[in-house]
Image 1: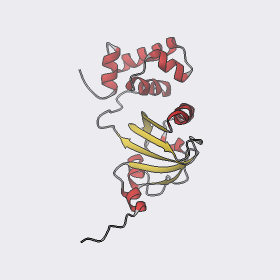
Image 2: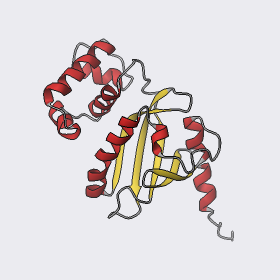
Image 3: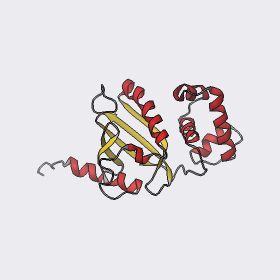
Image 4: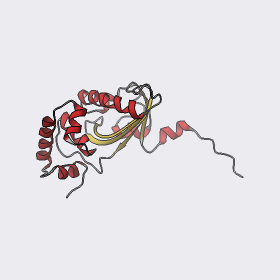
Length: 186
């Protein structure tokens, strides 16, 4: 009979096939190799850094933080796909999932995973920070009214951004725009 295998959680964390980190108040306490490689940093360089270094702009970092809090309070976890920034400045689509260790403290200690989905969904147009935010909501299947509620914009303003995205991506319909945003062609 085989002796039971001793589980080394630190090794599992470090070599997990997806980017992972432990954070407190949106500051990375510990990150694994997959996360630092995905974002183009050397081993350990993200430890002690704010999540802000992973966002295209400070405004996007702040808006995402405000959006996360009520969802974490309601569900205890958060997940979305958004455009993030590598150390080189390259923008890419990333699937992000997080869970608070204490449901009463949504941005307190937590575990976050990051998966690079840029092969399936390349960033192919120059987008403003607001257009990136609207694009992420469209990919989630949200309507203009839903996006307006979550961003404190008017539905008309959201429609204006959607129209700009349609022009930039050469999409004739909203459905075609979403297909292009997710990297599918029609």
